[in-house]
Length: 117
View 1 (cartoon, rainbow, N blue to C red):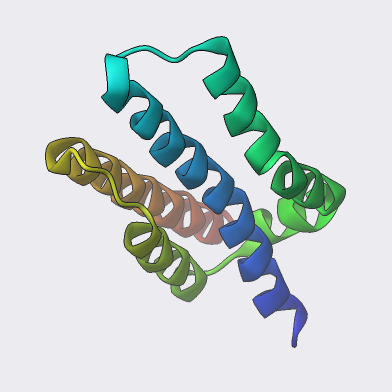
View 2 (view 1 turned 180 degrees about the vertical axis):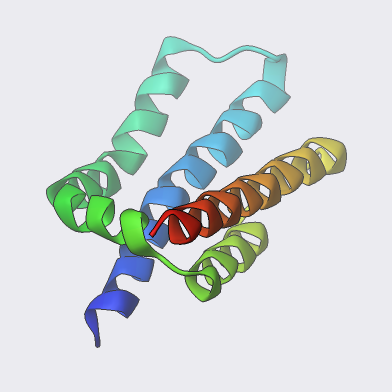
């Protein structure tokens, strides 16, 4: 496995944490529109191993984010959209659109950086 692919997997793991948190919180809110302390704690405990794993690779993650290319952005975006599944379709579409916008902003920043060089 090359360093670039490893970086994509690290980025996916970091994004996966956010996806898991969002989906878990939606599940807790579905019951009574509230999140109890025990529900919040169980959510944190569930993702804690992944948080520590990603934190231990923070340097690699930072380096990869600095130089990831368009193909990697699209790969991560497509993966995230497949992974992210909310019961509320409108909210899910809004988040997916926001992710797409973030990728486009990344493209713009990359383009501007290349023009400066």
